[in-house]
Structure formats: C-alpha cells, structure tokens
Length: 517
Image (cartoon, rainbow, N blue to C red):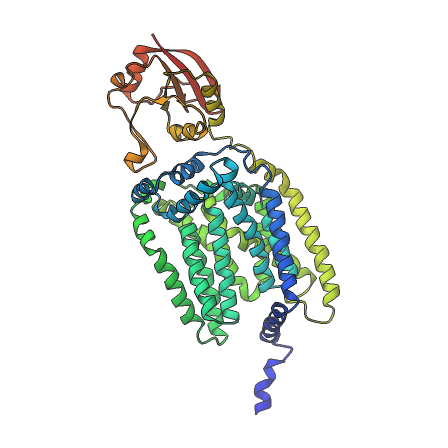
C-alpha cells in the first residue's frame, strides 16, 4: 500500500510534478554555487545591450510636451510642487519628487532628465533575463532579456523623462520577489514583494494590474499543496496596496486630466505597432508569444494575464477611465518577450534548468539559437530603434523656435503665445539658460494657479502698454493666421496696435515678430 502511494512521484506517465521538483532543486543548487556567476552573466548581457541601444543620442531628441511637464513640476519648489499635485498629477508625486532631487544634482539638460529612465530600462532588461532563468532555463532568460533590450519602444521610452520605465522596472521586481517567496517562503521576500507592489503603483497605477497574473500563480501554488501562499500573498498585496491607497483616492478626483484620451477601434488595431515601436517587431513578438503560452506550462497563466489582461481591461473601460494608451502599458512587454523566448527555446528541449545528462550539448545548441534569434530580431528592429531617437514628427519644433527668438531678441521685447500645445512651458524650457523676453500677457503664473497653465491678462491693451515689439509663438501652423482661436480681446488688441514684420514657419510652430504700428 505504501509503495503504491509513492509510485506516482516517479511515474513516467506523470512527469510534470517530478520535473518541477527537480527544477526547483536545480535552481537552489545553482543559486548556492557557481550558478551565481551564471545569474550575473544572464543579468549583465541584456543590461549592456539595452544601454547600448538607449544611451547613444540620449539628449539628441528634443523634449516633447509630457517631458516639459516633468521638467516644470520637478523644478518647482517643494511648496509649489505640493500645490501642483494637490490639483493635478498626484499619481506622479513620487516620480516628481525623485526627479526634483535628481535635477538638483545632475541638472536639467535633456540627457540629464532622461538618464534615470535609461538606467531603469537597462536594469529592466536584466530582470527580464533573471525571470526567464528562474522560470524556465538560462537560455530562455537570456533570450527574453536580449529581445526586450532591442524592442524599439524600450529605446523610445528609455529616452523619455516620464515614469513608464520605472513602472516596468518595479513590476518586474515584484514578479521576481513573488517567485522567490513562493519557492522558498521568507518574511524578507514577502516584505520586499509588498514594497515592490507599492513602488509599481507609484510608477504608474495601471502597472498594478500585474497583480492579476500574480494571483493566478498563487492559486496554482495553492492547488499544488502550498498551504500558506495565498495567505502570505493576500497580506503582502494588501500592504502594498494600502501604501498607495491615499494616492489612488486623491487621484480618482483628478481623472478628468486625461479625459482627452478618446479610444477607437483603430487604436486597438494599431496597438501592437504603438506598443512595440513598429509593426514587424510587435507582430513577431505578439504572434509567437501566443505560441509561448503552450510552452510556458505552469507560468502560462502568469504571463498570459500579465501580457493580455491590462490592455483588454483598459480598452473595455476606455470611455470611463481613459487609460488605454500604449505607453501606460509598456510594462506588459516583458511578459511578451518571455513568452516568445519560451516558444523559441522549447525547440532545443524541455524548459528546465540544465542539470541532466546531455546538458552541455543542449547549452551549446541553446546558445547558438539564442544568438541567432536575438541577432535576427535586432536586425529587424534596428531601423525602428533609429526612428525612436528622432524628434517626434507631430510635435512642434520648439528648440528651433527658441533659437529664432534668442538670436533676434532685443531689450524691452515681450513674448506672447497662442495654441493649445503647451507653448509657454516649452519655450520656458528651451530658453531656461538664456535671456528671454518678458511674458507680457501672463497675469497669474502656473505656480500661483497650482497648475501647469498660466492665467492671461483680462485687459490685453493695458498689459501691452509700453511694449513696442512682440514675439508671437503660435502652434497654429497649418496656414491659418497665427492668432486663430485666440481670445477675442487679445486678438483685437494685437491686430489694432501691432503689425507682423517677420514670420518664421517651422515644424508645427510659427514665430512672428510684431511691431507697434
């Protein structure tokens, strides 16, 4: 009777449980010995590749509107930053506070503003590799990390002063801590998991949807006989969520700030291209990633929920929450690359730590496969990586506009703005280290308003008195008069008292010199 009860443990007809036990034992042996060197190599190679893609040209592309908002908020005094987040963008409070400290040390050049994000993306590539190594095999982790490193969108948002790279980093850390806690439970790992969940929410609230995949993994652990996993997970998750709860509660009242984001069916069609940076790179990863669900076995639920559930939920709730934006969902790319790596490396044998006879031959074959697939994908992705470093074509060329003003500005000049693309904030950034004309129509500053926008003078004729020369910066650059859409009093005062003596048309922005008649 006893012998019969033990038979299923080694029955070749039911190998999966035995295989998982061997896999866990092999990972423990690897982690306790020379495997640490293997882990370091698996982590370091994707990090270096990612940084090789992201760091060159880090400051070459000029900042766009959202990055100007980062600069503006992060350079405010603590008092004015507090007023700002009390009205808007409270969900970015930790990021702005961190960037405030960073700018005090590193400065506010484009490269300096983006360096933290670039480093976060580099580390994320290494964490993807470590996850793949822990879940499947060394070759799987290495391939997943390298694929992640050369995704064009990783370069794009690794060169952007916004918090999406950090949301990706912390989602990866949370997943790694969860796997460690489930494999060998400890108070330290569950505490680190809770803190990583909180940090994920501080990176971006949408990234907390990675918890759905985590829950699936915990449910499977419970079914396999783990009696404490679900209790420990519930406690850690609730702790992490409670840390972010005040921010979430306050942020729910500020949701109108993204109401501009209306979603259509075409946005869903374009999602692979927008998420990955090009159609071919997104199509390859998502197409083969679906096949990876068959190879991922016990991790299929985790990776499937991580990759698919966030975009589905944000699309279905787009009319209410307005959160279906590819950059908000950047944290799902690691799951897709892990699925693709699992599908590809399954071709060279079972996805398990190399601790069996013939492991050397498999390792060589796996190394060749990893190199070939990663190099092929990098070759295909390289043009899109180059495009990711260029100025955004739909954004005004504020750097050139600022150069026009700086080269022709005279004492006593004023500057005015028209359009709806954050012209005042952008020109303030581009002229931050140079003498700028007085903003003659600004009556209440953004700091005083506790917002990103200023309040302009209600009596333009009075505010323009004594100014004989104006610089008009307008994003009405489609051939219509530059003051199209301006406040009627403002347009009338300028038309009555000033005439245009010079017009410079740039990409999506017009600079005019107006002199008093």
